Amino acid sequence: MEHSTWSECTKLAAKRWKLQLTWAVLVVGAMLVFALSATHAAAQGCAMCYQNASATGDQGRAALRHGIVILLIPALTLFLGIWGLIYRRRNTAR
Image 1 (cartoon, rainbow, N blue to C red):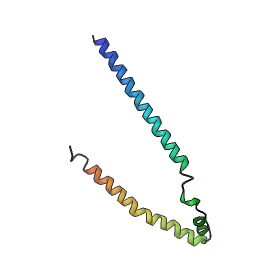
Image 2: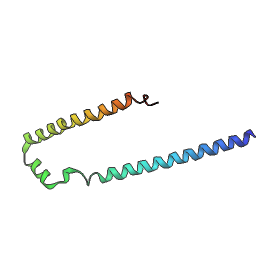
Image 3: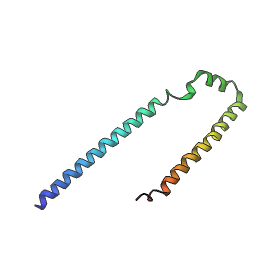
Image 4: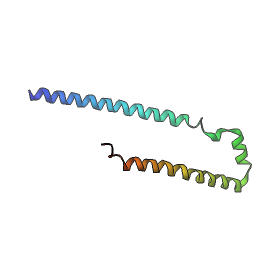
């Protein structure tokens, strides 16, 4: 009797492992598709943006780099703050 339950357990474990492997392959495949298609969707491909950025010179390029960092700070702060709240309160609903 124990042998049949052990066999059933190993079959169930193999089935779960196969399902997890299938999901992992699908997730990695989706990530690759998104990563490879992101170069086509980039805003740097805009001809007007590229021409304006290249015509500004060294001082303008430095200003654009600083502007990107300055605009990134509030977005990143909000993102990390929300995830921090979620992490802190993860056990309150249980």
